[in-house]
Length: 117
Image (tube, rainbow, N blue to C red; front, side, top):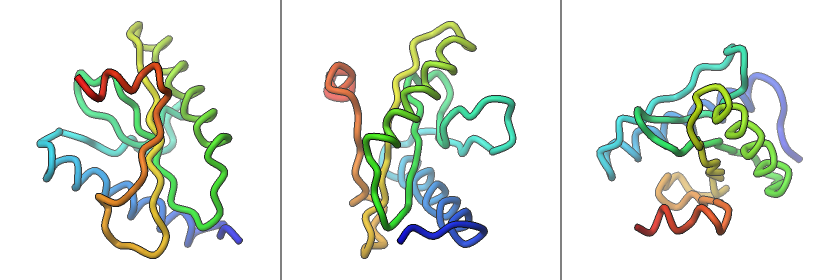
């Protein structure tokens, strides 16, 4: 069963920090966590001049379709607020491993080409 409360929030924050560190170390991105409490829920991680908005999940029970729908909504809100196309990315922690690089990434097929070019 997925945990709730402070422990779940702390696990999620740890995973977000790990992803930020991994993106910086592996790809040199100036990635930053988006602090909660903003007027809009705009994902978890972004970096300057990026068209990508990362939403991170670290839970035992997965609901990928619902999570990706949330990420799409948040990207649409951010797109409207900034006037530029923001693409959603869902990053899912893999239970049983501490290797952040083993996390899964979910993007819409229409956006995948941008990752490959």
